[in-house]
Length: 286
Image 1 (cartoon, rainbow, N blue to C red):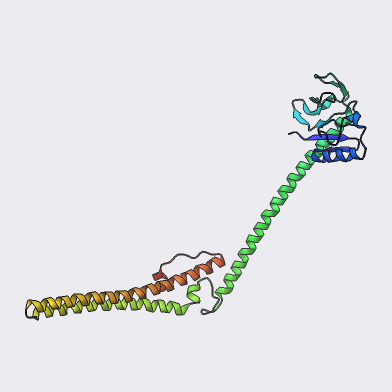
Image 2 (tube, rainbow, N blue to C red):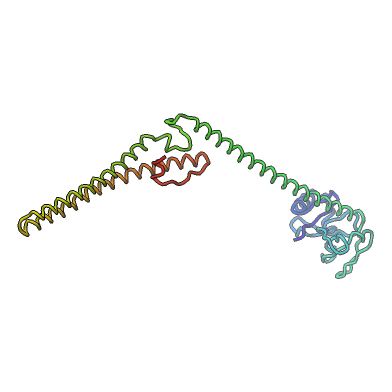
């Protein structure tokens, strides 16, 4: 919807401000008589308003740019039909094609309209410049915050890296500096697991040779079957025992490694640097 301009004896106002100003001026009786301008506080606010120097009063709407330059739209004071006039028509009489009423387009009124248009363009340019300035300031603040965050991270990183190896507030490699005892426990558990597996394999071989020797020297089929059943039960029992114990050792070591890696990852996130993924064996080697 085109924005309407109301050019009054008190000055030029437009849009919602114009509506409030018209109501205020009407209540204070600073406009002409109601029957002279056809305006009431409860009536439609696009009703005719008094232009400076015009024979008949009418509403002037926002100028539009056409082929012949800026054209000024207004409402006919007789039938309120929408009419247009060019700036070069100032000082001429304009006739309404609908009702035939005549009204004079004064130089002073059109100059007032041109001043309004100039003010609008200046305000638009000023608002655009302010938006661009706010955008630049916002980008500069973001860059400064990023630089300050990076400086704090580097300072904290340098401070923690300079601490002793067993310090409780070590650097990024948290698993290496803060929990040497846990790392030692994890290594011992892995060693115990490997020892159990080796011991289980040795016992299986010894048991196999013992069963073979017993079966070869046993007298009668019953004694041989009895030895085979005993050997089978002993093998199953030993496998379950050593396997379960080795599994417990291995699971405990992996849980410790997982806890250490989680601590290292959290420390890296707090410092703003990523932590590379490594397997449990690589962490134990380091």
